[in-house]
Amino acid sequence: MADANGGDRTDEKELKGATGGEDVMDDVIIEQSAVLLRGYVIERVTVEDPSMHVSHEDLGGRPQDADDPQIKEVVDQLLKIADDLNKNAELQHLISTVQANCAQDVFVTVARSIFEDGINWGRVVALFHLAYRLIYQALTQNHFDIIRRIISWVLQFIRENISAWIRQQGGWEGIFRSVSRWRTVSCIAAMAFIVAVVYWRRTR
Image (cartoon, rainbow, N blue to C red; front, top):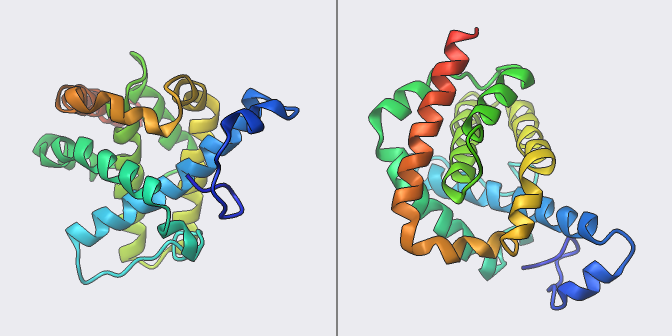
């Protein structure tokens, strides 16, 4: 995947060898998470509303963020896992109850509930799916300040709660090792997400 400056990262040992070690790798994971989230949102918007044109720049990114083929491959895999989430009618109804202008503590409460029983790729996708639905609401209302706020919440949550796990999987590329069981994982994630949103609604 490309590094923060748009160049190819060819030697992970080089990153780890500098002062910072795991922290440096986590920074790379967060940078990639931002690009992946924007790519995920763009692809889902394209499917859900082809008349709406959204770019990486609209979401706070850079034009070149769309050019990395490895990023595209990971986004495609995220979308495959998300297919079952998107087909779950009860889940979609519950997602619609969380508003784009919600407070950060509400977002964090729902996000933490998703991962209450552990972390897997399906639950990571559920987090992206929550963010996508909120961002889509904001896009339809032209509230771009809210969009960037939501993205920052997701990245902060990943840094504080998930980045170490992603690193242990070998980075975002680790999602490909789960390809044979993505349907099972996504179904589990859907149930976790439903529980999370129900919990949020009860504590309002």
